[in-house]
Length: 261
Image (cartoon, rainbow, N blue to C red; front, side, top):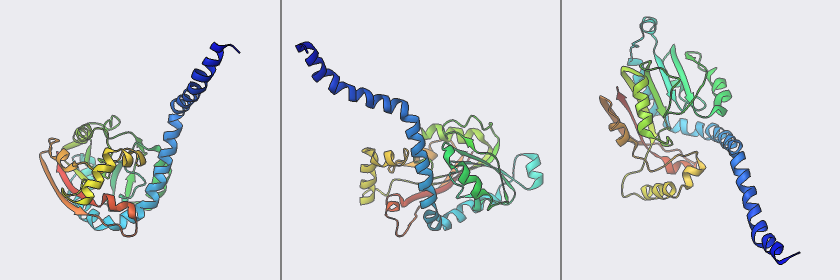
């Protein structure tokens, strides 16, 4: 072997080939990897969802009881005493039990892997007329018509949207005039607290977002909703305590409220 061949082999081929192979695996396998992450996240939602539901039940009952006060702008639905709801990031359907009788529900989620569990869970709530899952993101709900829903429901979603301002614009677009946006989100803890600092560290270093599909712990979601151009925004801070599950300690700080288009 010549000196040139030896140099190419030892200093170019051996170091570079593994990098090329790694690039090819990541590039062509990224869709498969994302699918695995989505399946895993769906499993996490199912496992931890029950714990969270018990802890957040009183807050959700208080918030979603206001759905009963809505009168649909759709004449047919109004005459039938029903309303049309869009839930963004419906997941496995943890909110179905809080929705009013005979409501029409459009479920939207970016993760198609949750569909089977969602439809299985929906069987427990025959009072909800649920449509087929719309696969899409909050920032681009092109499948949903303008001024077409009486209420939009969003729980634990705005923590992970890539563009919250765009997502809220989409919420306003699909709501009928006077329509209501119901939100429950975990947010940045109060300034000066240890939790506030830990949340910032885990978010800025991308440790938490990497593990939980883009979720960020340090968002001031209430400010984003207030700046979105709704005619009225009402919200409250609260803590949702999930005992015996350590991971929920990082997301105990919440806000919940209603914004009117």
